[in-house]
Amino acid sequence: MKTNLLRRAGLTIAATVALSAVTLANPLVSFAANPDHKAMHSAKHHDIEAHIKRLHDQLRVSAAQEPLWTPVAQAMRDNAKSMSDAMHDRIQNVNSMSAVDDINSYQAMTAAHADGLKNLAAAFAPLYQAMAPDQQKNADAVFGHKITKHKHA
Image (cartoon, rainbow, N blue to C red; front, top):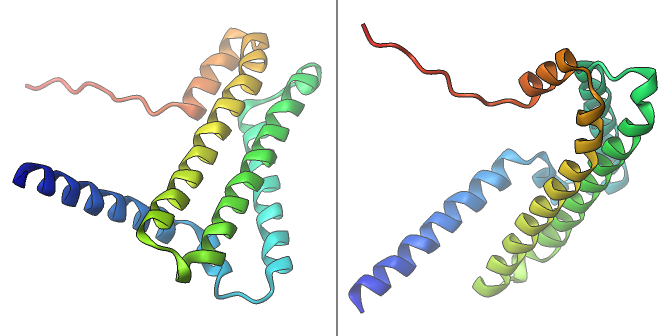
């Protein structure tokens, strides 16, 4: 019983830390303090469009690949909207949430994130398959978080 209580306390602390990290790292947090929601939405839209353009340029998408890029860009827009909506719902209710509501709200945000990644992967796969080998290698570097092995002397 004591172990179960400690385990629950540990999970609660871990969830709180994770939620705090997401909340503090996310610029949408200022949404709650900003009465000009339309201006903030416009800025977020501009940010995602800038990110889409940057990724397009980094991946060196050719004119022939544009039809395969379009679903990738749309998935990114849809994901940004989904995450923004989940965050908006959370912010609107944060002061009246019970602990269960708080956990469910966080779960909704993480589910939106997971669904978004699934959609992005499905949209990106055909583009990646159509890329030339050097372009694929570049894409691997753009998306990669490879761990390098260090030799010890």
